[in-house]
Length: 89
Image (cartoon, rainbow, N blue to C red):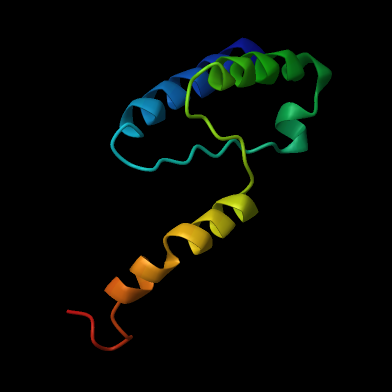
């Protein structure tokens, strides 16, 4: 039911928000037209999104923007810590 969808998203967010206090965390919300494109389901999504965005340190973004942020801020340290293929323990 649409009501259950909003509750599921909120519970998932609450858990990941707590875990995100000590690590980077991404919450992906799949928006398949069948699930969210129905008018009677839209209110549940709006409710969940409103709940999520009321919290501090929430970044609404796309996968592309996350990848760009990683490249700009963490790629060099990641590359320095990596091992060439075939040399991993």
